[in-house]
Every structure is written in C-alpha cells, then in structure tokens.
Length: 446
Image 1 (cartoon, rainbow, N blue to C red):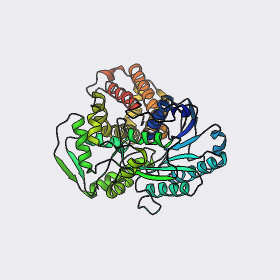
Image 2: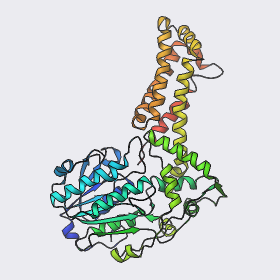
Image 3: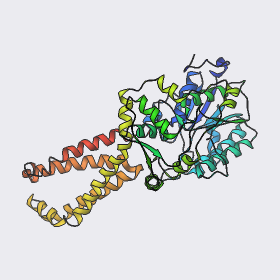
Image 4: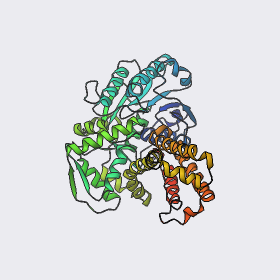
C-alpha cells in the first residue's frame, strides 16, 4: 500500500522511467511529485524558482524554468531528454503582477506539447479545471479550455483531468481560504455562491499515478469532483468543526461588499500578491463546481472521499489552528506595516519636516540635518512601497529591519533622552522590530 491506495501494477517498469512535472512547488504539483516518487518514478521537478519550496521536494532533479517564458518548442527540447512522460500541473487564478494566464495556460503548454511530439514522448497528463471551456465566462476557464483543445488535437496519448476545488492537508489559495473563514467569530455566507463538490488532493495525485501506468487508458478527459455537493458555508462549517471550534452564527455578505473585496484582491494581484479573493473567484463561485464522479471511478477504480471523511481521518493540530487564524490576518498585517512606513515618510516630508530637522540638529547633525531628514523620509517611503510590491517584499522587510536598528542606535547616541520621553519614541521601535521579524517568518506563500 502507498498513500492509502494499492500499489499499481507495473511498478518495476516505472522505477526505470522519468517523469517531468510542471508546477512542482504548487499545491497539486508537490503532491504529485511525492506520490510518483513513492511509486518508484524518477522525477524532474520544473519550478519557477529554486527556493525553499523546491529544495524540499523529493524529486531527484530540479529544473528552473518559467512556463510563461518557455513559449517555443525549442525552449523545451533539451530538457526532455530521457523523459518518458510529462505532467502539467502549472496554473494561475488571474492575470496579475507575476502571472499571465495566456502564457501560463495556453502559450507555454502549447510549446511543451509540440516539443513532446518532436521528442516522441507520448504520455502527457494535463491538469485542467472543471468548467474549462474556450467559451466559459472567466478568463481562467477560457485559457484552461484553450489548452485542453490544443492537447486534444495533438497525436499524443494525452489525459486531461478536470478537478473541482481541491482541498487537502496542505492548503493554498481557495483551500486555505476555507480555513481562514472558519477562524472568524461569525460564519460568512457569500450571496450568490453556488455549490461545490470539493475533491481531495490525495485523490487527484493518485489519479495521476494511475493514469501513468502502462495499462491506463489514453486520449481521455474527465472531471474529478468530490462525492457530495456542498454549499460554501457547509465547507467552512466542516473545517470549523475539524479545527475544534463551536458553530458560529451565519451572516450573509451582500454582493456589493463582496465586490469591494474582489476589487481589493485584484489590486493585490496587480502588486504581485496571489490573493485567493479576486474577480475570478467571484465569477467561479457564482458558477459553482459540481459533478458526478462515476466516470472517474470507472476509469481509475478510485472512489473519491467526502470532505468530512477526509477531515475525520486526519485530526487538526494546533499548527492548523495557528494557520487558520493567521491566514486572514496576514494581508492585514502586511498592509498596515507598509502603510506605517509610507505614512511616516509622507509626514516626515510635510508636517513633521521642520521638527525632524530641529531634532537632527539637537543631536549634533549640523549641516547634515536637512539631508538626513529628507534621506530618512525617502528611505521610509521606498521601504513601504517595496513591502507592497510582492517581488520586492522580502527586500523591503530586511531593509525595514536594518533601518529600524539604525534609528535605534542613532537615536541612542544622538539623543538618549528619547528613551525616557513620555511617548517613548525609541521604546516603540521594539514592537516594530518584532512585527518585522514576524512578517518575514510568514512571508512564504507555499
């Protein structure tokens, strides 16, 4: 038995075979990598960046490639040497500062599929989504559907899997949002949200493993829905029970309030943050994601597990409760911390400018008082905006930490009386430093 499932036939053959997995650090991809390694496959994990998440994968090879930049078949050919099968689990929710749906869902995969044809790699498993269709109402579903059509038109032995909303012990995006919502004192009902047949991450990974077996069917596509349609509040209530918290009073959020939340999420996306609550989320929630798993079961023998059964089999730990409580606090904390530095810089250049220069001169800065005050204010602004822009957030946090220490040391040397002033300007740096370290600790998204 591996991962609760019977080991596939043909395992001895698979031990000598290599599979290339795209999106290997994602929620789905990392589970697929682990499952295939357990089955004896040699795995080349394709990642956008070799960082903490990639180094923790059990794959024997890491390949740093950005699917959005590998847009020609020639970009892939060298990397497909010795590869027997390909699994594409890369994807994004919405266009943003770091993501292009056209490149990640359509152009990049199309180049990969053509490269597989040229190299003679027959088996390609493609993770799509329920409702994917070129005529779908969301750009997410349209681009996924376009990639599906491109693969279906190829001569490859393709398999297209279309899961519903995926949940599991690991959490990211929508699956993490359920836990965050479960931590609130009130249970929120989103007006207009349709039912979901949530599917377990382990069941999806097992499906990929079975469809890579030599005897598995080819040129098939099928949905991967969970066994029961649930309203969103039922999903959240299940997680709330799993986390050990009492049922909460249900409050319906009006559409206009959710529209504001989606727009704020879109703004976060433009700044490079992969917020789970965006315009696409609202459209997909209104569509729902339900289906019948009968075809899935008939092709693979897998009987998908219900949400309550899967949660009951793996009780929540205190770390799960920490994560749930922190999930919605994280964007608030980053926003407030960035705003603190930006507003401080603005005040230092406007209403607080004269007082800042006076204090610099009192501390013995002399002719450097003016450039020191202006430079400090500009540094505050730069740090605040760096924290807001996701690609530079880590840099901004380290710069904030360093500058806070500089302010602490310089204030102690130049004006030690600030330690005993009633408002405690130097004492307040300590909680700022603590929050800074806390944000660095929770910065990683997956």
